[in-house]
Image 1 (cartoon, rainbow, N blue to C red):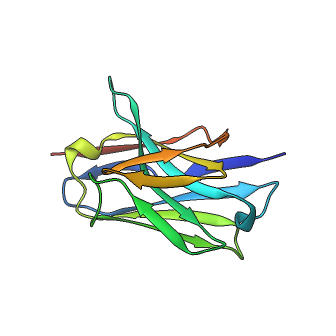
Image 2: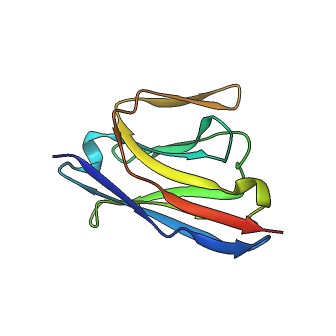
Length: 126
């Protein structure tokens, strides 16, 4: 069974850093593209970043680009999202997901994610 479990969220101050983890089980990271998504209160879910561990390709949406870094550790079957210089507008529930395809067009993530984690909450206070 494919499972994704996010962790690492929390309450931080503006300008702080956090690293989110997405622990995958039931499959190898080489078999899927993994993405990070977020849903802010009252807003639609948006793609943040994706990674293909098999090709080392990474993709970033326009809004967090330059502040967020996605990476993977195949030995741990875990994907990370390092977030720096956090802003109050980064406050959201962050989800990781697995699928076959992810790309960026005009600053937005396009994907076909099929498996989703339950999310981890990030709150950034000003």
